[in-house]
Length: 252
Image (cartoon, rainbow, N blue to C red):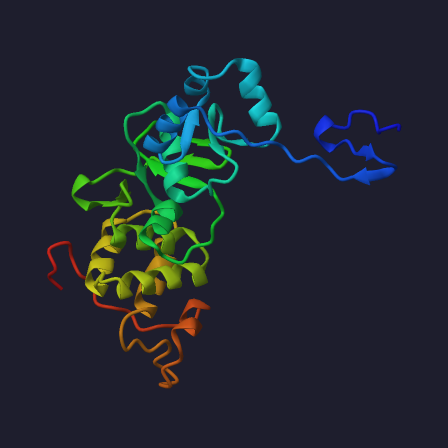
């Protein structure tokens, strides 16, 4: 029986008794114990060098070629059945960058906080030399250790800062959804205003201003019509009431 050139042996059909048997499934073998322990300590990821402590280069290449292991970043892998969660990707970024720790920020921090952001699988971090890679952005933002939180074993920007960062940089609809989710999680409107005020000169600060105001309890989008349109209308660009500025110490 002839087969197409270049077809993988795993995809060859075998003739048995005149009939045709479908593609032969790959036989998944358990990960070797030493690497499995490393994987479990590193939130589901492992490096090529760690693999080579347990496997030969040929065995490693076979696992990758068969789709059993999937690259997260260069030299860092996960198993195909391990979802690329924000926590997994944060650890993969740390291993890729070769640093002892990173801070999750922007959309990655929002995912860890449980805020409603789209899962675009771009990992945003602070704490290393600013750079941009495929699916990884290391931001140059300053880090205030007092405003960091630990979520799911990861160090992340606090809920208020995360919400304002997303409100500045995401779409209006997503930014408003995150602001409102942060408020439902216990972040006060005043805390959002204080964080917004601390981000003077940052890109998208005007949009964040509008969205924070739109989420203010009892906000009226357009004082001219007095009908108090829904918050979604504010997110669409409606005129809104200017809020009173609050300084970092809480005074008006």
